[in-house]
Image (cartoon, rainbow, N blue to C red):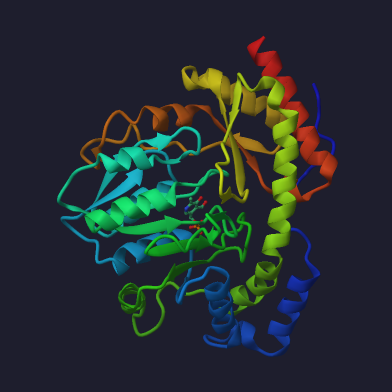
Length: 367
Ligand SMILES: Cc1ncc(COP(=O)(O)O)c(C=O)c1O
């Protein structure tokens, strides 16, 4: 069996500036305080980097999405549109505020909410839309925002997987009425846990703040977390450029099998980032067991690939309203392969080798 010889691919990677930030937070005592300069500084940095006026730091991306919905005033009796293939916590966030999810299919080229289908969704109760940029694909935000604005819906733009990506020259996370970032342990900007909600709407910000303030902050980001995030934010663009280059090389290495491995599409005027990079293993769109077989083989060979999300196409209609058949959400839930990002910052040879191993194994499985 062909083996990947350049792994394992650890995350987070050693970073001298993070070590210095940790030491400084120890020296100045901010590591043990409720309030200090780091959270304030991080909020300012994020406002600048993500072109927004307000930032609410919080304990995770999952909570960030829920806070954004609360900021819009979404609650019982409301509906919130969500893609049929998305992060499971986003479905739960809608339920957590007491609203009902309305599922819309994804665009198979980008793994993201299909803007054309969004146009055809009806319903007086719809209050908001959650749009996630997933697996190296970017949602069509200009069109989604135009539809939402026309209907009076508020939009949460989930940028947890793609900090630093841009669309039409504008940072991802700044298109929606609120944007959400995650600083979870596997993310491109990591503090182990944490998140942020970005907005330029003072009323949304105020509602979120009031909800999160219970005499103390109920979903806080700590000074220590903020301290380690600030140096990472400075390097984000540089690291994203390296990831982009590696992905281009891996795409190149796997073009031979394009009939079997359909990669996420990067559209004109978009610049995605890569927390995950996705392919659909086409044979598994109708035979789910093939994807699981392939992943087991890849993982045994040391290749950092995994299955995508399970999607919501099979959720009970007691819990949600389904707009149409959700055919792609269903297919992608069984055929998606995702490459984890740490390999993209490892040795150049490692990424290429993963591409070659993938090529080899898919070739064997479909021959
Ligand atoms: C698209 C998306 N949204 C939200 C989240 C949640 O982030 P967190 O782990 O910080 O709660 C994730 C985490 O993987 C994600 O992929």
